[in-house]
Length: 293
Image (cartoon, rainbow, N blue to C red; front, side):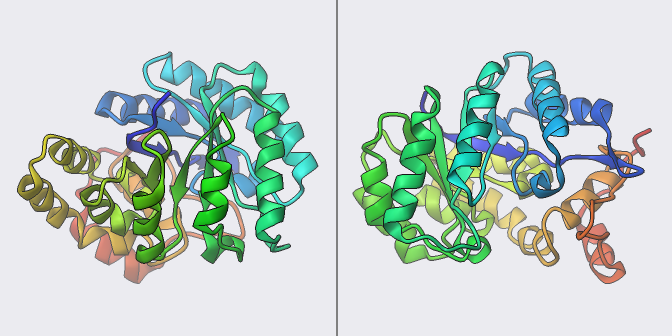
């Protein structure tokens, strides 16, 4: 399959410390109806480090049920022990999902050779497409374009969620990649820029808020309406930095709670609720809605 458009790395709603599965299904259905290209549970935005194995299985099952075949699903699977990641990928093979989003190994800071071997092993564990997630300011290691382009030769490594934070590196990747290798930005603030230079779309946490406007940016760009895309993007520019002013997904959960899309804005520790100061700034930009039960 070809990866493009606006993909949503879905938050995980909690109530009293437990996953609100009913609320989660409603939320996923809401975004599928809104027109997102695909959904990704169990990413960083979904607070995956705090989700245990049983909850992981349950979230995948609830995602499949809520999506009901309408859009593709990628599952976030990552870690810094290749054996564990391979086992997790194999375990999730039984679910009706379309692929895997796998972050670069973090904390132990492997070499480029180590990361190439890691992702090769992960790819061998499944027949489904894999998107690599490069986010060096979280993992402590940057996947070089040379390494990524070598991995693109692996048949089921289909693309990258590019959160390098380095515009020059990202544009170099767009120039050098095969057209069959998808580049989706994970840097929400770079969404318009990457589309303007030939990017395929984005995996955007901030698309939880003002989803229709994010979709409009993409659709107008695909239609070659650059002025229309820029005009739509200008409406998002003040909001996007605020959504990442405190740890993701804390500000996003506040907005969704304010809009009535989730019953509680709580996160699992070590994440806490949004600060009062940021909440006031967000409330000026995000309209209130009817509270979810």
